[in-house]
Length: 155
Image (cartoon, rainbow, N blue to C red):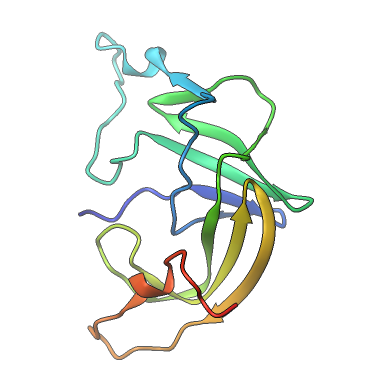
């Protein structure tokens, strides 16, 4: 799989690409198809890419211990202009920090110097922590996928 377009999070005022996709709600829609951008007669139709398998790309924000969906772009657009509290989401998001240590051109497998993990339960931040990633020799395989699961990460 091609490296994917990242969702973004406003983290203490800085917009950072996330190495994770937060799912959007199925029962309470917050988006609709952006018909204007996919009009076939348009001189500049929306470009489809293998780096863009998830059609909506979200921008998120953590504010006062809550996760919010701020905007959606791409083939879909957000219903309304007010940030939506992400009560539907429970899981761990990771926010890369520092230099890129190991690039993987598939999915979200790249490894950075540090990663901030934020554990969310029904839209509320319940824990966060920082993991310092080891510097790996060039072309060394990583087991980074195991670091990002939603299991017991020891914190």
